[in-house]
Image (tube, rainbow over all chains, first blue to last red; front, side, top):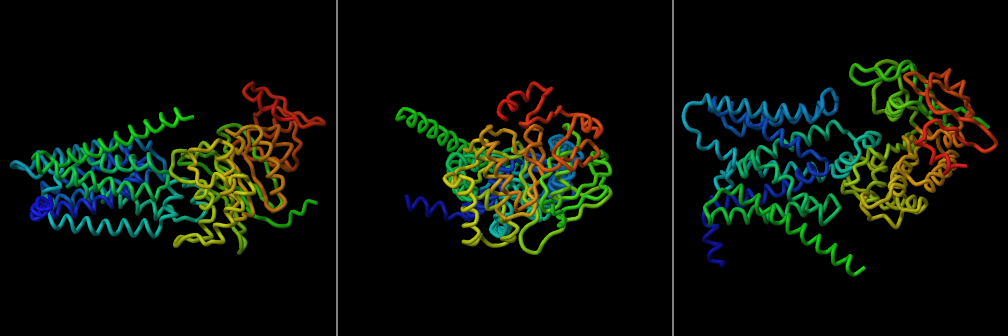
Length: 278
Length: 260
């Protein structure tokens, strides 16, 4: 077993994937928990898909696709945050439009780009096993920023997420915190794209937090637990993917879903047992 | 008895609304330190908009809202409509109450032992200390309302602003709440939005009718004719030896029975 592990970790791409898994788990632990408790899942889906527009344009002009995706997703996240503060348009409609518009731009530019685009598939379906050192470095920076922001502003973030009107009466700088969180969400989505891809990414942010929330009601513990659940799922997903030679994005998400269903099952059984005893 | 010397909040000639939609026109209202103002008016008349102005959350299109903040203590304690609260949010009763001390604590760092004690003592007074570690989703309507009231009171505000505190709570808590407010009124001004006219007139000192415009009625006795003159199309109220309400709206019948 140990020999197998040391052999496994001998490959640098496995090492990169493992570091990425740890960093991604920290990022999705914070950002995913926030997205889930604030009910921003649909909004995050919109940002994710809008970022494909940036990938397409960057692809066409021969630029770094992550850069293009970052610009698109940060701008759309800030735009949606602005709209939600002003309330000039229905939020869900705005998200829906942005969602498909981003995809449309992306598809158009990818189509216009001559030649076959094999790497593009990694943005759609992700592949944590092909993650580069640069990607890992970017993830590290983002993980540190996220950790720092949440540790410094833990209470204001929590109370603002719970009741923004009341938070305003307590002089919480809701605009600053709101916009910063939007940028963090947008960047997390982009940097996590390489691992599981646009199509699967939302589960990475939602399933672990929901598993954690069935076990605990404390936001702090939801963050910690969901990070651990992410880590376990991503590593399991990588191992399965490596051994069966199937896409890692899919194996990661399926692992998460199995844990989710198992937790729900255990919870149901405990409720039954409890009722029988009473 | 009415020592109206200290102004706390002053709304001067304010026109306010959202986007292109004007909800309140030329509204003026002054909150003094010993006030207990009941805000009544039809739905969509601008009661909530007025509250948002009073808690400094909405900037007026024209006119001015002036806050007379004292150095020590916070100015406003706010209790929102309970329907506004996401009950599946992962937050404990204790944390909710502590959030009322956020301004005192400041943005950085944790809560001091003193602050935690203040919060706990208040929870004791209101009778929710045994629920300290419960998640808000596990509370009844009355318990949640008590929690929110603690949050509003924990920083010892000078004005307590309540937006329909009597919705979704059982009638026994409602009576208790009003008695609590009556006592609190010795220490702070209270501004309360309510649909329950019968109760409001027996507890508040003055009434503000809000329906796009605002009419301030400097007593808690209000007649049907005055309501009509104030352009306030709401249920009838009659005054007798025992405060009671004569209702047109059959939905509110149960509330009438609870009262007396």
